[in-house]
Image 1: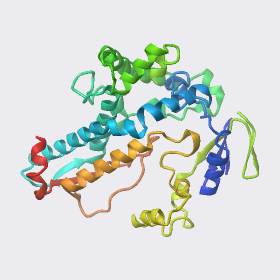
Image 2 (image 1 turned 120 degrees about the vertical axis):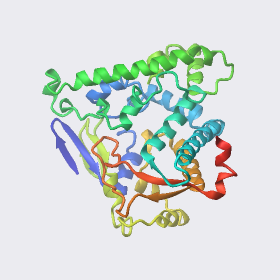
Image 3 (image 1 turned 120 degrees about the horizontal axis):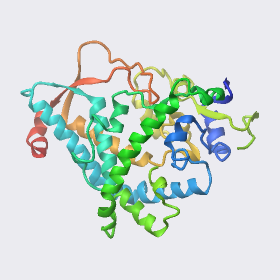
Image 4 (image 1 turned 30 degrees about the vertical axis):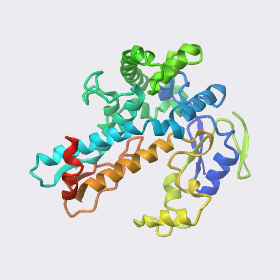
Amino acid sequence: MLLKLGARNVIVLSSPKAVEECFQKNDVAFANRPHSIAFDFYSYNYTQISMADYGPHWRNLRRFTTTKIFSSSSLHASSDVRHDAVRCLLRDLYRSASTNNGAPHRIDLKLKFFELTFNSTMSMMIGEPIGDGLSHTKENNWFFDVLRGAKVPIFFLAPGDYLPIFNYFDVFKVKKSLAASSKKRDAYFEEMIERYRTKCLATKKPKSILGVLFSLQQEDPEQYNHVIIKGIILCKLDQYDVPSGTTIVANAWAIHRDPKLWPEPNKFMPERFMQGLQQGESNNKFKYIPFGIGRRGCPGDGLALRTIALALGSVLRCFEWEKIGDEPIDMNEGVQFLLPKAKALEVLCKPRSEMLNNVLSNLI
């Protein structure tokens, strides 16, 4: 389906076949990411791996992340970081439950799992657990602005992206908001980088991501400068000519609800995924699309799967969970860019009796 959004053409892919055609057979043609006003401010002149144009610079960044961060050996070396983050989560849940005299305690799962992801990621970045310093507080942390649902301008759909005339007037103050938010983010990362530079360089075999980057910066300062650390052609698609500059969007919502792919797609049937694995389906990746497809697919899928399995298995093994009230859980999506639940999931949490003496009590 072709949409005309102002001055931009957008093609929406709603089937696994179309996704495969685009991101597997024509992945080079669609390897670039569309530019936008938000990423003019947030991508450091499009030098970040997620937004860099396809070419030597992007390949160098991809090679670095694949070999230094997300390789099997690197993920194995950083396993202690993930285990520490999960232990911190279990300890926090246990302490919260202990204050309620053993009765189930209300927990905001969105907040807890965000903190788990944040602590795990930042610990890998700097090579040690996150402390109270470096402005790591919920009040002034740029990351927690996203969690609280603040209107972080990086996710704005700027009118100027679709009607360029608005770029000359900035009627909606989009650029002003972007400039202020990007300045706040830069200050956060600059403080972190400068704080750990000396410590990382003093280590002969750096274990953190920052340590590896600082070492590479000494070897090749032009390639790994401070900005990097922080962060079109005509082709055919399924017999249709695709104009230059067209944006391609995979409609995961439609694919995940296609009855031809998923019998009774709206029914909760987790066993369907095990059946697909047992049958050895070769096109599963085009049905799921959790980490993107093709050359621009997320290189961190291995890290994500390891973290999810460890965290989910730990909290289910150590705690009993109940929903609050008799009403079905509200699964409506919010209006933010990342599509969180409109209403954060709150549940009742209680330590399992058999885990109190063996595991949880040892975490305090």
